[in-house]
Image (cartoon, rainbow, N blue to C red; front, top):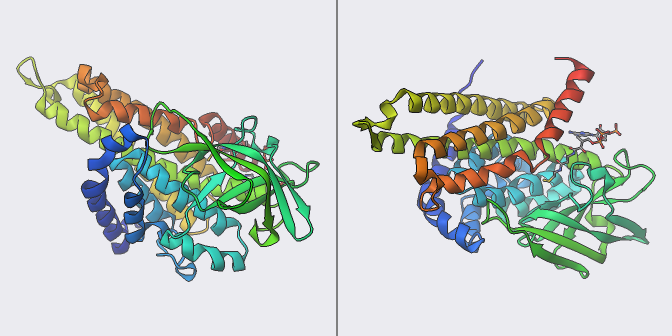
Length: 383
Ligand code: COS
């Protein structure tokens, strides 16, 4: 057994950490205030080669696997959750939907531009009446000669307003539902009939845009169909396996930031004649958070290793997302408690981390859905 990161992965971590410290964290308050990640920052991520981290070398990427992507996600989140989530919409679920579901020809055609950041992706599955149950979607794609006509509306699409090519899931056979009735498409943002709608006003992660996308008789040629007709639901689920794991890495980065801030604060803040870090009540909180971070880290990188070794990891990805998001909630909550009144003030960074954390128990599949995925697998395959 060898739990050490490769030299390449360690160098990646250092490079992303330096970038986060120098370019992301200093902009975090502005990004939150303006509800917008500056284009230049996204371009800088491209210059660092980060969009292609998980894309194999034969498709123009860095070939650092899901492990590399999790390292990048963890480190960027330490500086700002919204920047990491925007990055993830492109580099994780956007690009990964092509990697897991595209034909060989499509991977060769599209992935090199995803890797450079020239093409930015996004992932459009959820609808107003189809969140936890995406098979109930009503967006349709109907064949018309050599083209497809797409109609419908997707909601909660992260960075949908920044995407050039959106992975859209649509019903192509109503009688089949999840088992063969859904097909994936790559829809270019310049398509006629495609429009970006309202942006959500959110409790946290306010810098990341979350928009609706509407498709009004959008006509695309068959070459934009991603994978086989009817294989879309499997593509959506396999992409989410990776997305949930990457979200675990986000939670890990946010948790480390919260614990690090809380520890520094506890060392400085004096009560009853000594720093509060020397009071047992605070020490127990620090100990519990550090222990949970260790567990999160173990889950994230063991599961990333499974993915990179092509070992099935659906159950483990759901477990990682479930545990990491719930542990994060406890960790940011303790951090607020350690900060006391200052933890409730928007002048200090903890308040933002507390709000940023909450949605992780909801998006990429609610934690109730993760428990369903885990339980189904335990029942089917045993422990
Ligand atoms: N990888 C590949 N294929 C998968 C898969 C996975 N992780 N999970 C399911 N599938 C396949 C199944 O094998 C099945 O294929 P067959 O019909 O050929 O056997 C098909 O997909 C349908 O699977 P299932 O019957 O389990 O579908 P359900 O409708 O019961 O849905 C859940 C399963 C609930 C797990 C799914 O709907 C889900 O994840 N919901 C949450 C959606 C979500 O996360 N939304 C947020 C996205 S925002 S980024």
